[in-house]
Length: 76
Image (tube, rainbow, N blue to C red; front, top):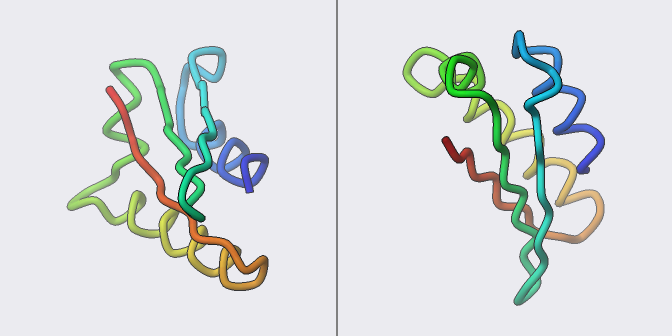
């Protein structure tokens, strides 16, 4: 899952070197925190949060297949 989210985010942003995604697991939920450059945060969130919602939907689908729950957070 981490590789999928990393691939999606790096394709969206201009500064690919600034992308940092951390994974933390607790209470049966895997939390993926996305850190990008300040100028690229809008590209990851998208208009009205549509890209962020799409990433979360993909995480939910992969989680259902793997039997895990994923939480996606975007930090600035």
